[in-house]
Structures are given as structure tokens and as C-alpha cells.
Length: 86
Image 1 (cartoon, one colour):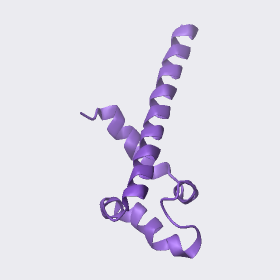
Image 2: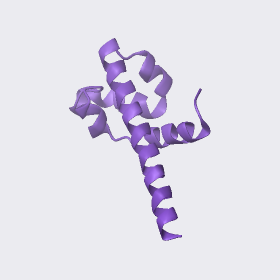
Image 3: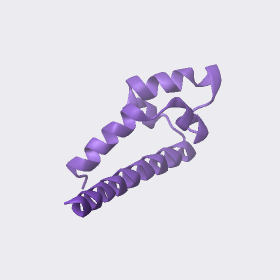
């Protein structure tokens, strides 16, 4: 089950992921050939995901999982730092 925090983190992923990151992960093509995919990522994410090949879908899932893990780690570190200051 997804938590509210994970849902918020996923929304941050969608709004903060750059085209360069998607290109680097091999999810969209660099340059003009990736323009349609980049536009779809930003404006029609569900269709973007549905149209991904199995390989690119795995790369996208890994990218999202990594983002969520980093977000969780960052929250834990911030909480630990706050406890040390208090």
C-alpha cells in the first residue's frame, strides 16, 4: 500500500525530474527525437508509462524507486539532525 508520504514524494518526482535524467536512464531519446516523449511525460504521464517498452518501464520503475528511497533517507536524516539539535 502506498503511503501519503510516498504519494507526495512521487508527485515531487514528477514535477522535478528533468529531461536530462530521463535521457540518461535511456527512457527517452536525446535531442529532437525525444520531444514527443518528453511532452507526454509532462502532460500525459499515464499514457507515457503505458507506451514504454518493458526495458524502459523497468528503468522508469528503478528511477522512481531510487527517488523514493532518497526522499525517505533525507527525511530520516533531517529528523535525526532535529533530534540532535533539540
